[in-house]
Length: 262
Image (tube, rainbow, N blue to C red; front, top):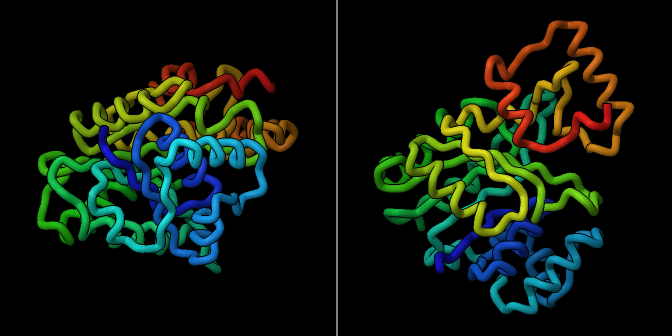
């Protein structure tokens, strides 16, 4: 079985790493915060979330999960999952510094046949225009031929005990058909939810802004915040907002039942 690296052990990366370990993958969690590495190495969880704590305990019981601050430890991995945050700067624009740093960390250890998946929430075009050039320039290899680059945007809702990392439906896109297949097969091996193959890497962002039958909403808002979601839906409807085009019904059908809250 292939080895997995998870870059960033926050509320997205840690449960994902734990899930991979539980499913039998030897998993290396790479974290830049030494204190977090120390806590995890001691078998404890730095995230106060019942679901995450239970998942980590299960992962530790398998012996497959190892937290580290040493990037060299990911060299033997064939699947690399980027789970770093995307903060906003003073101008309220996305700050891709963590993503760029993670990609530069992975690049020296990337090998032929490896799969890189960006789970971070990023704007359309980021994978093709930023991630791909960094990996190709730093490695001298070509995406879609020597390695695969995919995007599977995280859909974690912290504190939700029903929709968790292990069962929430996911959407994958990649820069090549081979990459989509590789990413979809990997996620299908660890998830209990549906994995939707949308082929185009840019299209994998659409579930962040998804059309319902009676209006528009966004899955990036916590599902429990029904009032807020209704307000967004109504505001977008009034403005004539349209993002997913002709494919919206297909995408919506496959990413969950958020619409039932309306």
